[in-house]
Image 1 (cartoon, rainbow, N blue to C red):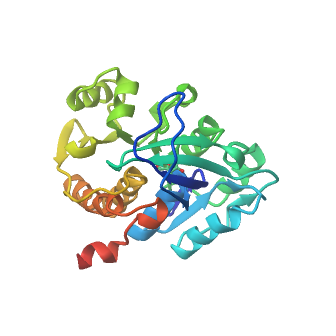
Image 2 (cartoon, rainbow, N blue to C red; image 1 turned 90 degrees about the horizontal axis):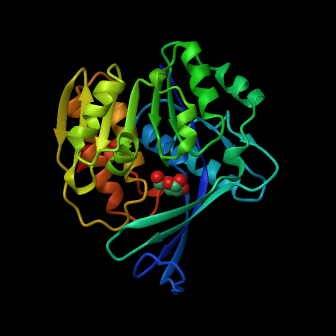
Length: 294
Ligand code: RIB
């Protein structure tokens, strides 16, 4: 089984601020750091650090930032041979992180949003039935990518984040596993309580496994009509960026390796607690070996 993550690669410009800016405000930031990020890249790094054979597909621009993004994937054991370089800028973000470690993210798609049909075909020629496709909502052609993977008989994992109207064009009945947080869960279902969100999935996508993360309230998972729950591992949070991506990578590692849902939730909670205790995105994700040593 191979894991293909068809997703974004971003340069994250992270500004340390007293509080998240309000409309019309100007504020000096205490610090700026530049990290490799993107939900796609972060999840690939998490999948590989957790120990799954991971191939990343996606695009970088030729503005000089792409090499850093490829290097970070390479250094973390992700296969980058399918990544395409195109003319134009890479994707990037402007991220504010406040004193409480909360963040807000402004996203520019760049090369992530220039995926072509020819490139999709080339990527999928390397995969077959039984392989796993992992997706987020930071690239174009998501509906076509889902359809292509479904036709191949691949297992499809969707993290519908950031949540927006583009996701309506995707056939959610083709998704095997959803990863959502409480905000996305409310946007999708119109409900705010975790159990109500899971009920919505139970009614609308009864065959899917649903992992719902709830920030400080932990996480839960709906599988075959049953709900499994997991508390957080308490740590001093420094930066929550990539916590959800870490959760996705480590849950999938455990679950796809045949461990139970409860074991997968517990491993993912431990891994993401390490990520929030460190600044940055992909660089803050621990390895499986680190978790075993702790
Ligand atoms: O999930 C965190 C990621 O979201 C950041 O690395 C940023 O690039 C945005 O895509």
